[in-house]
Length: 172
Ligand code: ADP
Image (cartoon, rainbow, N blue to C red; front, side, top):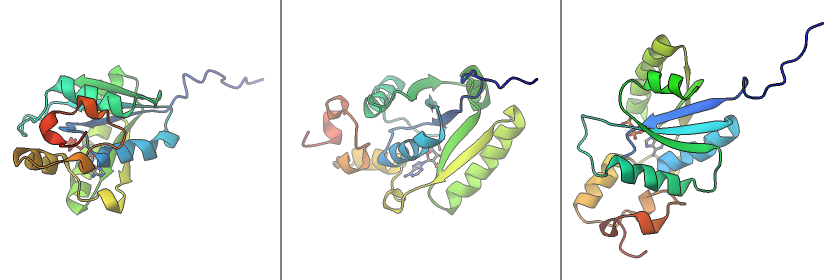
């Protein structure tokens, strides 16, 4: 007689959410929060994007994201260099999680999902943004910071404001 597999570990749904997250925005936070019921664990993996000039150090990025999910035990935050597919294997992820705002995102995400599936066999789960966050991007936040604007409404709702650099938010 066949026995049922009881080990929950083998069936764990682990999603890797890779990105440059420079900085992590309210749009990213919303994708993770909405994906939480779908997965047992979500690993936010901060990667280096050599094509974009960085606003924040990897260390600060990690601290800010960790603060936003301090009450979510299913969420972990890591940094990486190299191939995203290798990082997924390293952490035992069996899904990639990504977000889509507009048609340009969709084309990029489709290509990336295909390459990642070829490299690792891991499928990508795409969530569409909530309409109220469709205009939010890290590059807009970087631009606004450059012009000394208050970016508090673009940052994660649950972020620890004490960790945010003073010139990003005027009233803490
Ligand atoms: P990358 O540089 O790898 O594109 P980003 O940090 O810019 O990394 O974005 C990571 C993921 O989050 C991407 O899938 C992107 O489409 C998605 N994303 C970014 N902003 C939003 C938003 N406002 N709503 C939903 N998804 C978003």
